[in-house]
Image 1 (cartoon, protein in one colour):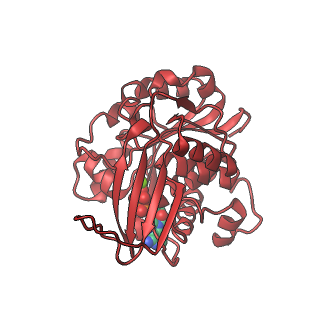
Image 2 (cartoon, helix red, strand yellow):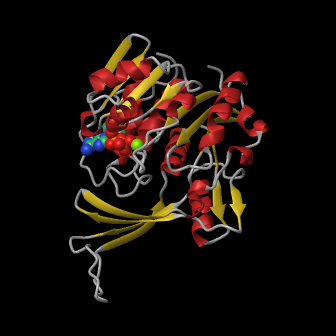
Image 3 (tube, helix red, strand yellow):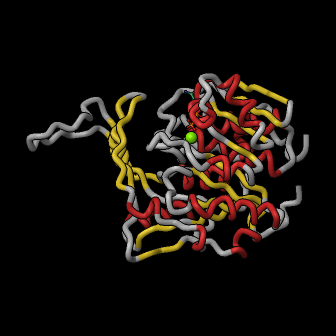
Length: 317
Ligand SMILES: Nc1ncnc2c1ncn2[C@@H]1O[C@H](COP(=O)(O)OP(=O)(O)O)[C@@H](O)[C@H]1O
Ligand SMILES: [Mg+2]
């Protein structure tokens, strides 16, 4: 595929930070009790923002569009994304809204999350100019269920993108309302679908991936399903491949699925085989789990290829 447009990838999605507090004694106690935590960090949060950061790290010319408030957290996100090479010039800064954020209480491998939605659900399809979609080889949407104002316009947006020669991908992530509705209409115009196993089952109403995967393959040409520590499985028409995760020392798996998406889309845009795309994706997902937060351990292409034992090899395979 020729990557001749202004951007290889346009990510449409939520842009908000995570405030991570970590330690053994992390559980809050009411009654005005003050506790001290071991570690604290403000980092790039949001599935879409983490995915954009991972894609830029791999070398894709990546832009993100979304909506933030004209506030400290909004500007933190714009600066942090720009520092990672993501073009943020198409982000809408709306002084009437406040940037959303999550407080993550991390204890060992477990975590509790408190999210202030703020501007996370405010982006609408009308905020995204046609010309911006035309300027990208590929458009990705993450956190479908959190972006409630974007959802009604998304099928048309994806349809137009495909008509204009821009391929599309969707990672719904989890549905906090457990309704799992509206996705089929978007899948009709989706080139590549990237759920995890639980999401694939919930969306199709199937108990097992063995039945969910063929059901999804009827709706979308290419499906790659994330299976956590077990790796991932992908299907294109009747071809199915499965790849193991990379054994890594896991700090936390925040954003592993988003880094996986970035890896898969890198391979997809370079015309790689189903198996090679999936191998790069799983390596990117696993390596991202080496550090706290979603972005700090995302690999460069050279690093990912080294873990795939393909040092220095680029291009078609
Ligand atoms: N515990 C783990 N050990 C190694 N790799 C992991 C682990 N958890 C996730 N990964 C890697 O990250 C990818 C995506 O993670 P997953 O947790 O399945 O996605 P999501 O975050 O969307 O639920 C997996 O396919 C795997 O390659
Ligand atoms: Mg996910």
